[in-house]
Each structure stands twice: as structure tokens, then as C-alpha cells.
Length: 83
Image 1 (cartoon, rainbow, N blue to C red):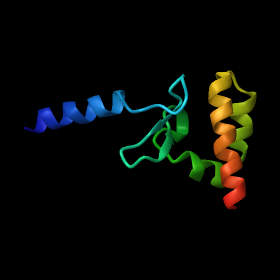
Image 2 (image 1 turned 45 degrees about the vertical axis):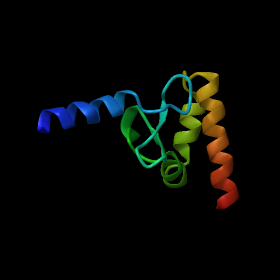
Image 3 (image 1 turned 135 degrees about the vertical axis):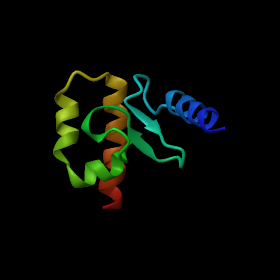
């Protein structure tokens, strides 16, 4: 059973529902949006934006798809409203 469980978990990770078309942000098993790349892979997007606001600017200046930037901006605006 252990290998089977691991394969199931791997499959769940590779087929995680994505927030943006490029798959830079995905939903974790609890429905939270997490980064799916780089140094913050697996971390909550909201948490990273709160703790490291400069990461947002880095991504906006970076070579990311417009859709990714749009979704990230929506999350940032939500974070700013909730304060």
C-alpha cells in the first residue's frame, strides 16, 4: 500500500487545480492558493505577499504570463483590503 499511496499523492500534486493558466499558483489540498515554483513553492500566496511584499513587485517585473500577474494582483488587492 505505501507505494500506491505515494503514487496517488504524486498524481494529486501533478494534477493540482491551477489558479492561473501557466500553473504558477495552484490550490493545495485544503483549497488555499500556493505558489507552484521557485523559493516559495508550496507556500501560501497570501502569506508570502504579507511577509515579503517585494516578491509581488519582483513577479510583476518578471517574465510571467499576463494571466499570472492578473491573478496575483487580485490576491494582493484582497490582502490589502483585509489588512
